[in-house]
Length: 392
Image (cartoon, rainbow, N blue to C red):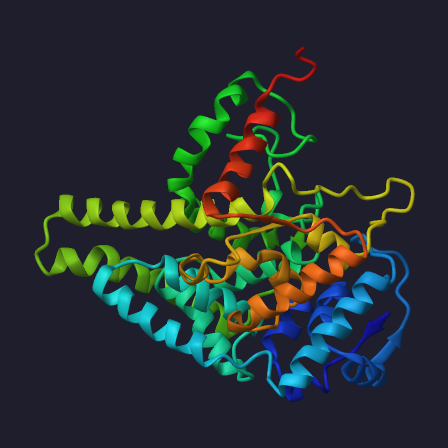
């Protein structure tokens, strides 16, 4: 079903940015994840008609697990008279993280909390706040928040671990590692469980270079990138200029030796990169996670979307407040994927509902004891797919 939101875009409570990103795309599951029946009813006013054909797979209608889980979580917040998007504790975390940026020159906390929450509108109900948080990705990290939103929200969160549609597991013909069965095998993959984690230090530099490629080709993995607005262009190029000025040129101008500037840059960047890479890889690219296939006959996905979110990820360290704090609540990855609009502070309570409902409906919900066990699952997958095929 297609809808014309031209007259509504400036009235959208979530701001116009998300609608502009979604223009011309099938965002059915994103809409359902963030909205309820009232918004679904209101959307029908703007209905244009049915589209012929499709460029991405569709999912079957929500099953009893999905419907029951959503109802129970909604009831949870209604009984508590709590707003799932409001979280004073998370705002305090933002402040402490921002303070840490200036004191320690470290950015991992910002990426794991503010940027991530901003991309989902998962803190407060003010789109201006979300945009400001996201802009930190451009100005403090040097990577595009617009392209990140395409990758993370519109690709990864919809088609989690689905080969060909999840930008997070997109691979070229020859990669430094093998993370899915569809990739061609090369003999050097036998050592990938050893060298891959070491190469994760290059994540930040790689993403900044890829930003330019995606910007000029108007593609982000499997998704077509809509033309950047004037504001998005200012943020994209202004962010990269600000990043280079503050990280490289200003220190040189102030008389800091070039060797110290370069070494400080790479130490900070390598540290940020490996922390982010391991935390994200330990949730989806693991040996217990499913990698669903598109039905070759129908072109669609046969698994209910909510079930897919539970079975393509793993949680860890649910009873470890420090793990939750330093991972930006990404240790509740399954819960976050099911309810991306819910603020971090509420995820532990929602996790109990998810766990009980998954048990009732026979849905596999994997929870590791701690981060190290979760990382072990990632290393396990690298070892498994690094083994030569048909070797006995």
